[in-house]
Image 1 (cartoon, one colour):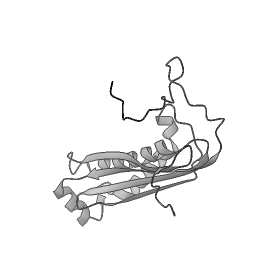
Image 2: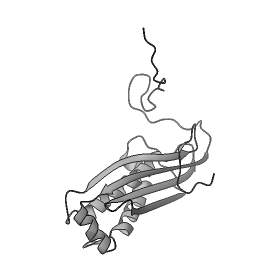
Image 3: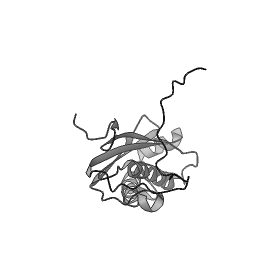
Image 4: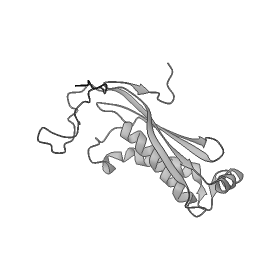
Length: 171
């Protein structure tokens, strides 16, 4: 029989011994500094991107970037209300950066920081994706051919393991 080269996976953390959904008990974990960065992309048809470049990223609804930053920040603070097993966390900081990535694509990066027993990956992903959805909403009158994604975790620090790169790190 051939041996698997796939690394062993850990058990799902939100399923109890009986297979029922459960919130992870973090009471035994140490309170540490934690941070996560996530990104989401927004790709525009060429003519719409040119129009947005010419208008300084403003639509008929107003400033796209500023509105998306506010929406993403609000979403970070409410992630536990949107995702059933997320813990409510004290958010120490949120930074959302939005800039052109090429001529037709905006890159949104959301970085979240806390000092707590659990990480902020879901908060960072929520902030980035809600900012992207807000940009779509602000621009949908121009085109419905706007594409969102991919959305992904860029990096996290704190907890059991560090992954990738967190924006603003000095290493």
